[in-house]
Image 1 (spheres, rainbow, N blue to C red):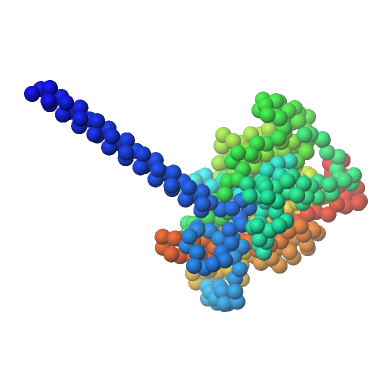
Image 2 (cartoon, rainbow, N blue to C red):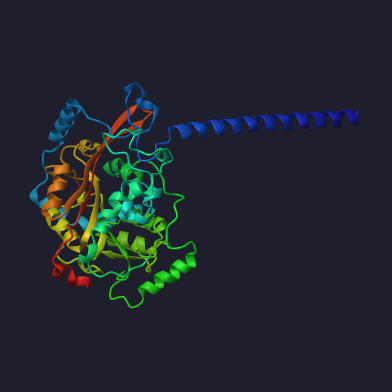
Length: 444
């Protein structure tokens, strides 16, 4: 009797084990299927997913280089005209201006470093941020360019192109330096949530997660070289071969990805923000290294930046979703000041909200401060640009156009069957190489 019972238990245990094995096998197979489906949905390197058949719109989460027709432009204009009635008094508008820093301090005090994610799309849009690695980044597919165009090498299917092609524009600014440049040390909440999708990742890719920086493979040797560079400097980063400033750095969602990817010992990063709370968060980060980076509080609309570097000293200024937060009356002065800090041949890399972006169309009546300039519910402000706005600002400051484009993207909520149109303006402008050496004697 007991023997039969034991045999029954064993048989039952075997059956349970077999059932668990079958269940695990089916789960593994289902997981692999989901993984394969996710791979199929992944955005092509460089943002080349274009919607050519509207019946497929809800098969993906994002579509690139979307073309608007006249009807859509007219509808967007009507919506902006509807929400552009200014109902705030001049006193209320002036109060928002005076308390701008307080509003941003409150924003970062609430959200800390949890609101925005690191901008891993930076190096696809702006390979100039790590010129020695530019050939390892996905090549950006520009509006009007076919993703399978003949002028895109076959290797682009893996997200890479030959170094010569990718570096052609990047090297121009460095070659432009020539013999006329300064002497340099030679070394190897609602609307917020709508806007968050761009600030959090842009094209949704993380093409540089496996990238390695230059300057040798041994981290200890790189650190020793950096410390040696810092000794005897009259200002932080003086002996560095590549100096980059980010204005409006927030909590470091641009600075830290750059420092992580670009391990060139000659790189030195500066970053500043209007909000002292944001700058404190940057300095408290474990990734903040004073041998490679210097963060400081700065009102970039002011006459005196109190910058830890002289004028005519920067290779690149990164201005991403910053200018839009300022009073439009201060745009001209701010851009001219940035141009003053660039070395001859240096670049401003710009990206910001474009006219008729979803965030602009979602504003309700009573939030408009002036034409295309609005106040959010938390007191922070936002302006929406056109290409001509940026072209005039930059060229009036004496800069030469390298790139000026409108990036239109269609974002899709497949669950709710909603389509959302995003519009951003992206540009690159270069400071001309001057022949008068007296103009660049600051660092000589």
